[in-house]
Length: 285
Image (cartoon, rainbow, N blue to C red):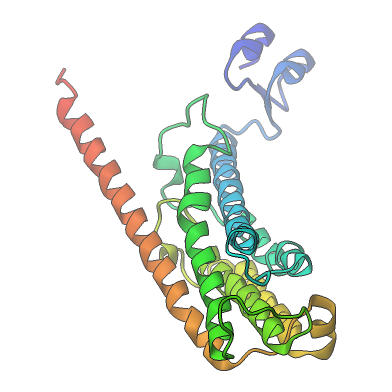
């Protein structure tokens, strides 16, 4: 505990803050200010929670990149009016997404977090499973909802493929607004599924993280201002959309929740099966 060379070589060198030497404290990675060994457990729990929360934050933020990219690919490949403008992307990235993402960063430690084995040295915050979940699973579902809402408004307004629309055409403004609003609606559902990589979305308790709820309320208020106020329409190039457009998006959000919960159930079941195999293979002593 207080031997400087050993503290340097240890994975995590721990020195006493009250009775430890100055050399030991300088060589250590962690200093116990109260000389209480229980503080080590608390520090490990907090560290694991911070690691998990950052991963949840990254998943939530990266997911919205896909529905922001797909409209531009569709614009180039399908030669359709641009479904989402630059200023509307900024409205998502710098406006509606920020507070819910901060709420994810303040999530309490999971009840079983200290029952999990230590992470491997090679584990990183940003790895392939996280990117695959964000870019290949959750993101495409959000993109499908956004583009479907865009087409829904255009089709309801009588637009036909190949027809040109000016940037100030009311139908075009409504269609881009529907695309933007669908992304925000899907992100509201996404913040719940991103509260844990394996744990069921609503097992945390709906009111256990009030910052997330405040972030969702602010997100809804902001998109309402963008969609239904004159200054919001003028600044973000939007127009009021009918209630039917919102109702159209709801099944997409519920579908994403259901599919993600199914994925989590499958991952938990597979992990339990592997754990049972390890127990059966362990030799008796």
